[in-house]
Amino acid sequence: MEGTAGREVEFNEGFREIQGLIRRYHPVSILKEALVYLYAPAKSKFDRTSRQPWLIMLLIKWVFLDVLSKKPMGRPSITQGQLQGLLQKVLDLTDSDRMPNEYEDLRLFFRALAYQQFFYQADGKLVDIARQETIFAKVPENHYFKTKFLKGVGLSIESFLRLSFALLASVGKQGMVLSREHLFALCPPFSPIEVDAFLRAVSVEVNDLNQTLTATDVDGRGPGEFLQQTPFLKFPLVKVGNQYWCVSPHVLSRSLGHFVYDYLKRDDVNSFNAPFGKAFESYVGKWLRKSKLPMVDENELMRGLSGQGGVVDFLVADGDSNVLIDAKGVEMAQRGMAALRKGDVRRATETSLLKAFKQGHEVVSRLPSVNSKNPVISQRSKNYLLAVTYKELYIGNGRTLAGVVGNAELDKIRANYALEHQIPIENIYFLTIHEFEELMDMVGCGKVGFVEFLERAKLADSSPDTQKFTFEMHLDELARHVGRSVPLIDVLKEMRDELAKKVPAFAASRYAVKEGKKDDTA
Image 1: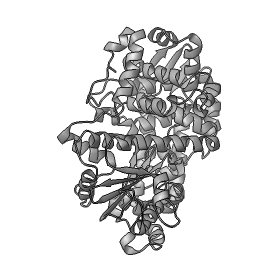
Image 2: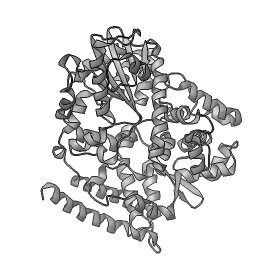
Image 3: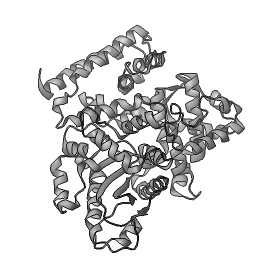
Image 4: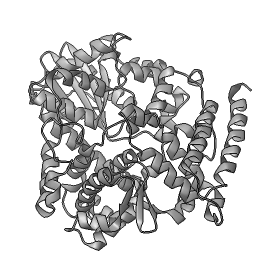
């Protein structure tokens, strides 16, 4: 059968076969054997990734979404061989997934794969814990972030992040199983009430899995499910008896690395957006100042520019170049992650990347008539635009933006500005906050110039042989020559040392933070 309808039929037939196999075995035994397979020793990162953990997460989801999983009495346990046979059925079913030629632009297909797979291939990012410490914990006690989190979770942000640090260390040594007692022993400074509040926040009871998964299962079964983010990002631990089973160290790391942000946003997005937008803009400005380059913020731009119009958050002068920077504390909704059509990405980026594109052009068009005493606010021969996001959008540069939203959409914006005021599409980049931190750290340390690096990236991206999918790949290339930068190293050391004073084992743990060491911190 050909076409979308044919693949729907193929998927439904294959899924019914898989569901029939699932119902032969006790669901908890499938969970256990799936994790045994996932955690088995691997020869290399490639060997571990070849197990396709995203499909393991999908199988576990299907097992516990089944309404009959609530009444498994009398079912035998699955063996490892039977489990791998079941996983092969899931792998075979991916043939019913969307084909690359169904995507309006091939870059949409690559974005969908990136969202599905990339974080399973990354090293644990303790720097994400440190970033949450800086943005969410270093605020006044009566701040919205702290009061809302404490009320909802029953634990302070500071304690949550330190327990997250400890848990990441524990899972690395303990494998898939973590006991409540072990966490108590690991973290004696925390009370039982605090540890229990933490575990409740990041786990789900195995007997509640069906109800919990069903509540978030909006789209139901279909081929598009293969590209969806796993729901276990919300609860990476499953409580089975007195044990907590970690569904994946990568899912755990990703979940804890963004937990405070995700929880506060999920709890009340409308109340969260305003304080977070302000905090994120301030955080980007803090890192920008590490470049030691002349800069102004949006308030100075509004005072210094003539006429009316939008402004970006920051303007940096580097030689005869202006770098315009806009902080967009956003993430991509599921529909935008796996979008087949450019229109879906356009709608998902209207208030972020497309808005930054417009604001950048408005600033450039107003610079020629400026009459400001501030030497930074001046027309220069080259203009660059950077938008910094909190999470990955996998739209690395202006060319990719044109590809995934449609060049016609950008032309509509450009049509409002004279040709000499248009920012070249190759001078536009979109960075995650982690990428921006690392770039500013390298610029501040004198390893590379700001515009110098942008020019290097632009040159590489001008050829299909050297172009990069993400901005981080440009940073990796530079690091091979000048050494790795470890952003937030001071925050990581402070958190580690604080725990080490109370728990001596931390001083010698595998999470000992060292200058320039990437594997455990970046």
